[in-house]
Length: 220
Length: 132
Image 1: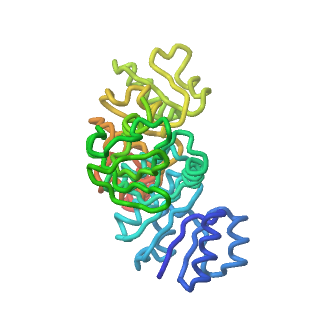
Image 2 (image 1 turned 30 degrees about the horizontal axis):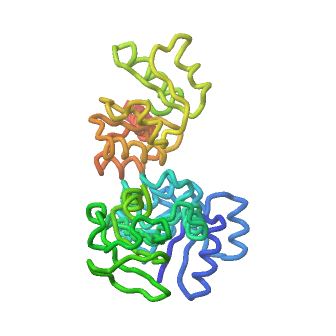
Image 3 (image 1 turned 30 degrees about the vertical axis):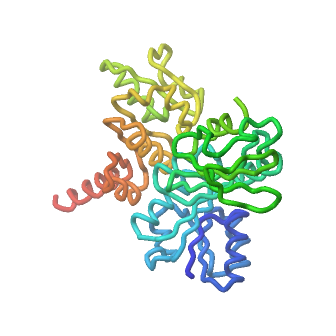
């Protein structure tokens, strides 16, 4: 694959190194002179110096070919959004991945169609939630385009859903229980499946309805 | 008004004088000074990408948004959000880089590019001298 990476910070540099090792063709763009010199010593002609939000720099880096993939990995969210938009809409780059530095900027990436996105903060928060589930609900997967997500809840001794049939639960509109994991084995529940303490319940629902689901299954 | 530098603050003052109800948003508290000693409009300190702050500034009811922070990309992102998310009827944005200005203008943003204007004027003046 031919891959263009904007931003030679820690993320962009390590990504470049890994992708080159896998045999891909990579061009890295870095603006800061000091940083560029270090990168040039390692990557030689595979790194070019300039502002990756400047159209002529992107063209010098080969965006017209176009690349199979562009990664907007600078430390500035606005820059990553603009790079992603220009790549996709002006040059028809099919695959764009953008780094989010401040998770509060996620709505801008969504609104302007720059996706998928990767956020270190978001990823670590996800792990914290998984390791230390403070709210009894873990986000497993987000299907952003489809506006759906999959979450996991554990039915404990005091849970409202304990001892109740799946069919008798008043789930939020559009929510479905897709799997019940009991003693390590998963089954697809039907209306008559009775939930027991210790069950891990996987549910699919629209983002934002987690609280409603938790009220129905765990407690008010 | 998002961004209250030389351009933003002067635009704010002029619009305020002609009867507009103007709220100014800037990252730097000191930029309030550019609006004179008795600025009667609103003034909020913070980043123009802060959605809660934009709402607090009244972007949902705004008739017009002018974006003139010192970052082209920041301006382009905020202007697109004002147009698409908040459906502000009139959005105008300053972009210094002519190439990005041209690309986004073609996509329906109302853009002012001082660099392109300067180039045009400079070239025009010299060409006129040629014909004299």
